[in-house]
Image (cartoon, rainbow, N blue to C red; front, top):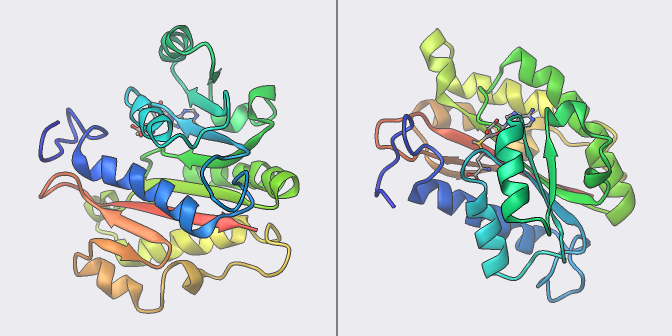
Length: 237
Ligand SMILES: C[S@@+](CC[C@H](N)C(=O)[O-])C[C@H]1O[C@@H](n2cnc3c(N)ncnc32)[C@H](O)[C@@H]1O
């Protein structure tokens, strides 16, 4: 594996990306409990759903190495049908959905999803992304009803807004507000507010180049001078 990421060639296959995958599992172990079979948090009782790309198998390898998947409890989704066909041939024991996740939310393969790795690599603040994200609400609610919890990981490009002279910190704040609005009413006991996900003053830290964990975000960069990614991790319950 290359020591640094080159977004042109290995944006999804580098140590920073691997650490992010491991971070998702760590947060699931630390912050979720109803999604696990029992208090030992060794095996999930729900399905893990992931946008695959060419490298989603790195996630499957990690989850299988750690022995956390329920039998057949992985659903791989991708826009590219040929890619999904190839995955299905290699792993007929897992579930596969070809097409746009937002249009396939009622697919039977998604009925048991309690963890969604929405690893889309879109831009923070992209208006299309905002519309699509509203649709995730239904999937999250279904998970909360079924398991009492739903884990959402949403990985987006933080610095692409800078190209358009926007300010990354403010864009991340707006992104966070949008997430809270879209998930309003999903938590039975309280509503998410933006500062729960991105602490007050987080904008300035983001603008001064912060990398690391900030509130519910892991901000990371694979390549030294590449864009930062903002991976949001929320456990709804
Ligand atoms: C960054 S890759 C996923 C990387 C992978 N999760 C990993 O850990 O290496 C993103 C993939 O998501 C797919 N994708 C993006 N939006 C999608 C959508 N709405 N429905 C289905 N697949 C989507 C793209 O085709 C792309 O292949």
